[in-house]
Length: 453
Image 1 (cartoon, one colour):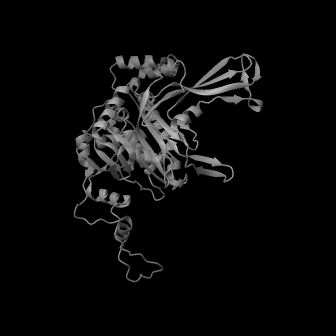
Image 2: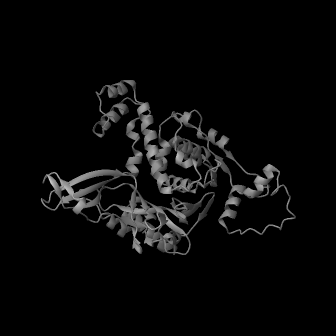
């Protein structure tokens, strides 16, 4: 059974904002079984120290007899200074109000007080790699997998230090965007893993590549992988493309000239899809709109190579290759001319538990692929410049769980449908994670739910 660890808000930097954007995405990626296993299994290695030895250093328990205190109490205790203004000690303060034991902040405080806390340390050397965002992510995943505890809190401090060191935008107190962080993290993992694979190439292959005798384009990558596999190396490029194999899909832009009716195509890969939103709509209708025909005319005419000039044309986007994990970004933040800034859209957008994509090309492999919703990242706030993120995730053996920084709580499946965007409050679904499944698996789950009802 997988352990369930909350992520502690890692505000180690004096200017750091809430790290909920990071925590929510890390939880969603961790509970993607193929992604988690790929992170843990790369690279194949003989570690300097075993995970259990590392765990013994990382895990510690809070004193159960110590009184709980909030951040302000802890700060005053550390400075030995009560709240003082202008050097004058205030008169006797009013007794504190009783805390709301149902509030998220109280539950987080209890989690920090009672649950084991797992620290992460830099184990890049034991992986045979240089420290990077990938090795820091691997530290977190391996620490959670190795622990015998069922629940606890993990501190992602080293991960955040690497993130802020390598990316200046995360050093500020600005509210960060969870979707932008997801995109950056996936691309960083790809870059880190590919750089490590290149660094680990045997000298003769590396020299051939530099001399131009061996191309590094996609056509010859397979031959490089075969050569390395046959040489029994422990790190081979054939196991470095797992991010692509899981998250990558291919979009095809089809443009038809209305004069000669010739169709031209251009492909581009994606790791997530961003879709525009309409009021009172659904994810399915938003995806259909994504692939609607667009008229290219007047100043926006298409240059047709077949006609040899600018012509009116119709353009549409289709999906040529479906990813195994579909990350859907709902574009809740839109720039408005009248306000001259981004504004949050509270449009009602219904998302299903199961999804098929119908905007595929004729030659798409497995065009009827069925997807199952397994995670939702929710943005809570009135606009793009402030707020908080939580994640609601379908786990392997505990059903749906709500992850809110240090707090982890079980929730009903119907709870997932509270974030279409039309409920009172400021919480809206922002990123949806769908994973491939089968019709038989869907039937089994539905039958189980009927029996449990």
